Amino acid sequence: MAAGRWGWGLLLVLLGLVLVPVLVLLGVTRRLRRRFAAAPRGSAAGEAAVARALVLTAHPDDEAMFFAPTLLALGRAGGRPAVLCCSAGNYYNQGEIRKKELEQSCSLLGIPASNVTVVDHRDLPDNPSVEWDTQLLAAFVLKHIEDNNINLVVSFDAGGVSGHANHISLYTALRYLHSEQKLPEGCRVLVLESVNLFRKYLSVLDVPLSCLLPSDALFVLTEEETEQARRAMRCHRSQLLWFRHLYMLFSRYMVINSLHLL
Ligand SMILES: *[C@@H]1O[C@H](CO)[C@@H](O)[C@H](O)[C@H]1NC(C)=O
Ligand SMILES: [Zn+2]
Image (cartoon, rainbow, N blue to C red; front, side, top):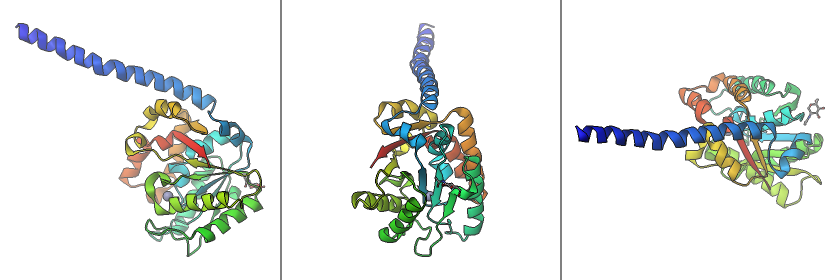
């Protein structure tokens, strides 16, 4: 009898020990999300909104999978970002379909087709085992920057978020342009922080940690905007395998972008 009561008591205490922190975490997350969705944080966030920004991606769907928070936050602040996608995503010979999907996705993210450009070059293939030639890639990127008076470029960091070789090639090309001072005067580069696997799939629960850690720009989406990002993601019909649905539910990149200046 006494042992039974003890058992129940212990269970309640344990439940409280788990439940209370979870509720507190959820509450804090909600508040932080609202606060940072209303006013992005970071020295570069304010200027990003008024910049002529270019989001540089490797494949059609990168813009929705990884950069939706940046694109939507810039749009929300009145910016008109453009997208330059450096391959047609032709790994499974779906390049033509994927270019159309990219246009639809971008349109949902507030970017008109006239501001979406695809580089479709045989030496820049969509292939996870191919490192793109830095000089060739840098030449394409620089020309686009100069032709469109871009003064802010946003792309992947050295981790490429998913580690895809093509993503990392973009970072290598930007770092080359930046360190060789080939970028136009005043053109800044922001790179998207790659986080560890645990944080990557925490979804909105990664908001508190992202707020605590330093970054030059932090963009957080509201629930409605996150739904908009998911709709953009669903435009990539040829890519919607079952694990993409899980990704949409659990990836923090559907909600949060933390970025660092080069
Ligand atoms: C978007 O496209 C319009 C029309 O072609 C162009 O005038 C504008 O400069 C482009 N914006 C960017 C950021 O490239
Ligand atoms: Zn990609």
